[in-house]
Image (cartoon, rainbow, N blue to C red):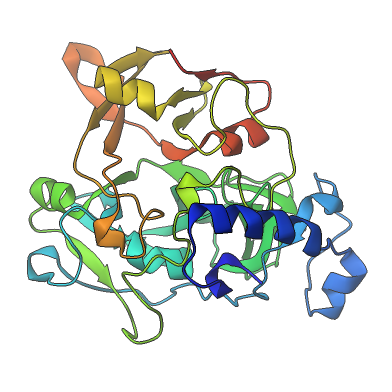
Length: 335
């Protein structure tokens, strides 16, 4: 069972489902995983296997999009103007990946302006991150393992079947152990905001419009739940574990700022990074119809450069428990 198999539910019912699922999802061991057909080298790992839980679907049960189809954003008639998209622009080629699609597929393997990229979204963490999918000169394709760690998507590459943590971009099990994917400065914004910035941009469309209930949220009320799904780790102090935070992780620093604080201030400087917030983007994890979700706004993250120039940097708008799970020694700024 996963949240996708549950009927439309209220936050209270979701909380009960979470408590029941936490005791029903057993961990597996490498022997069992090998029986499932995995060719992963399980002798190489940086984690405890007990940290891996089944999310319900099997390997590739949540199918990645490997041959993405786009149309001009000006021709869009399906995605609402305030609906969230992951946007990425490389050398003038700007593309929008609607969460109404990513919520059902979680991974898109794409190539933008000659750069192989993978655009990912983990609904249980509300974590939308884009990566350069080249590692040591090799271009990797990624799929879903159907497994979770700290409630976060565990991906795998099809070349070595190594397992990768979506939130960190690090290989945690297998031949690629110790390798990391480079995060790209994607932006989680509304389609309308993307269209304003990139009127000649492209938008991802479903390969098969009837394959899933695109536009519908299978995790109704999740970001109003009392606690996360399939997570048993410690919780952050001083902040609701399901509160949104802006996470910055680069070579110089790793920190998080409560979205509520940024929303109040609109512009905030921290550790050499400037964050801004503006309204106009729906939550994808609120109401059944994604286009009707409450306004959570859009974040931008920059490093100030010479002559007041700004350079966008990778960031993520995730839940507080997620940042705490992967960075337990880092504080979350709440005031």
